Length: 402
View 1 (cartoon, rainbow, N blue to C red):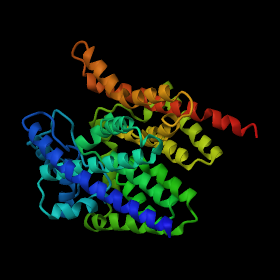
View 2: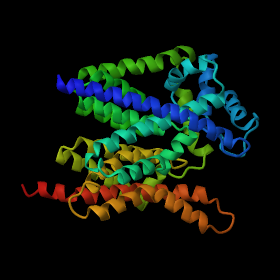
View 3: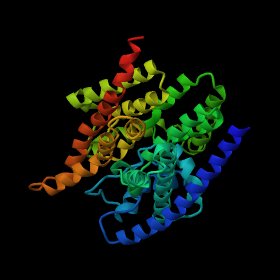
View 4: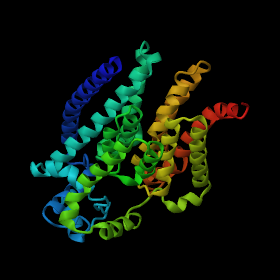
């Protein structure tokens, strides 16, 4: 009974925290959206293709056609002509239509929907940060460290890109984490629901979800909950569109051709890609050897993203679980705590440091940001993975002495 009461109390606290952050997020995003008017940046721009595509489906049209893409261009660029910039497409499985449909029916404008979605993502991130710092109990009497962690989390460059651009990457990663949490706390029905939601952007989370049902295969309620949730998400758009899979696969196959990618499947063959692949697999093996499910899940997320193309830095949020995992080893270390803490904050701010340095020292007409996207994908995953490997190596070494 005490555990149930505590769990219920935490649920109320975290729900209330999310609501407060969402209200604050709406105020912030409204202000930001107003200040960006007349500039080249559009708040929540990555929601527009999904929003326009969902509206097309509800009108009986495929989101994967050129006509729908022209409507996306009209919404973003104000013209149906092929843009000189990013040729936004729908690119997602139609499950996202089911999630957006109730809000489309409300008749929200594109800009209002984008603002609310950015506020929602910011509130999800902020609530997750709140849960994180609360669980770092050793720092509860050190307000400065807590404040620095919150600021570092809010401005962690990949997460920052997610809530400003309205990306779904952070949403999918956090849903996967929630799915794992509910499996671990023996709430398999909720675990199945959140696992299904994490597959809204399946390119980031399909391996972790498969892993869930290998590790927790005895929790059959979770599997049934997942299957029912997937049915709810996919049945309505499938009834409207018919067999949509060939159109989706054709649409997604154009992604790397239509966009300037910073990372693609061919990069796995580079030294950086091979190191990333080997490090991820080795960490999964470490997790199995140490019976550490958090390490297994976090490393599986890191492994998943190596196999799909990425155009910017926002998909690097897949490394957030490993960064949080490191925080418990470095910030709570008994020895060399100060040095490890400093290095931890450098690790969180490294994407910004590297981007700002490149902008300061740029030469000629080179697109510095595009170059930085390539650089950060070639380096940052391995920096995080090697940091975790070095941290866990003493523990794995000790297992061979037993």
